Length: 359
Ligand SMILES: Cc1cc2nc3c(=O)[nH]c(=O)nc-3n(C[C@H](O)[C@H](O)[C@H](O)COP(=O)(O)OP(=O)(O)OC[C@H]3O[C@@H](n4cnc5c(N)ncnc54)[C@H](O)[C@@H]3O)c2cc1C
Image 1 (spheres, rainbow, N blue to C red):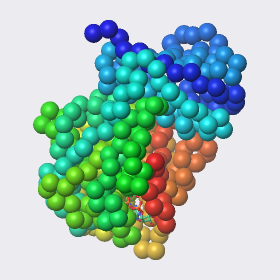
Image 2 (image 1 turned 135 degrees about the vertical axis):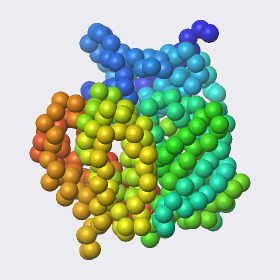
Image 3 (image 1 turned 180 degrees about the vertical axis):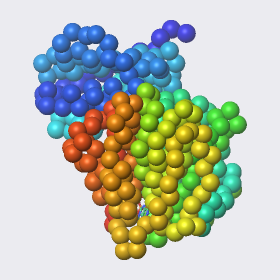
């Protein structure tokens, strides 16, 4: 099959202020930077290539991939990066070339609940079935945006692709609520993904949907989302609260067996401890949240007390409440001077705020 090509032209007078952030973000998805002239960025991915050429106020984007999935992924990565960082220039991306005008959103799947069960008193495992799930295993990311029906919008409208390749809503009045979750396990060939959803005390749309989900319920899924980890890391210091636990558990089950280090998990009660089929040499330590402590504080304190392993292949990974993640990020990045290639401290939720990172 001939290579598929997409291209777009943007007018971005201030691109000099943010282009570095855009190319850094694009490169962080396991891209190889190829040699290029000044003002040109060339990135090679496992699924295709991207080129960005800046000339005066004009920026030209091009991407090429061997198949439609790869092409859609490139459009999504580039459009998302410009939407995030080029806000000052209000970018309007109109993709031309192959699959231009295609309204099918490649990153979207309509899923149905196959089963729901309780792992612990507050963790529901929901198995979702759907078709064409290969892309959710293909790009080294493990998160998705679930599109949830709610009492206000029980029959939502599902997204299509806009001219920029991102989700567009034919009927904004019936747009579903979105929340970000982790694919805990999946089998693309068998057509299912498992999502472990926390039933937390404040009950938002995600938590309350999980509480009552039953076989046959429809739900939308967009993805995959998130950044792949540094593939060279072999020694980890990790921390997760209950929302970060599905991602941590997936890493412990899928990282190479010779990976070592320590993982701390903060739980609110001993009954929330769950079995993990840990295939690595990473030692797991469960921490009970201290009475009266803010969520994630016990975890952040423990991680910071641990210090940093003096090894070139070490990686810090943290997923918990926003304030705790911020403390750990500051400790790793500012106090210890470690870069993005060595650390990832992510806010998975924020106390008192609904829908963090839901887009
Ligand atoms: C990359 C990523 C991956 C994630 N993976 C998972 C996952 O696999 N499983 C999972 O359960 N969560 C996961 N989360 C966290 C989840 O997206 C949030 O907890 C989300 O806010 C839940 O939505 P909701 O509708 O239940 O609550 P919202 O409507 O978002 O919030 C309602 C209220 O509940 C509070 N709240 C939200 N989350 C929590 C919580 N975890 N604990 C206590 N109070 C909370 C909010 O502060 C707010 O006051 C992930 C988040 C990210 C960014």
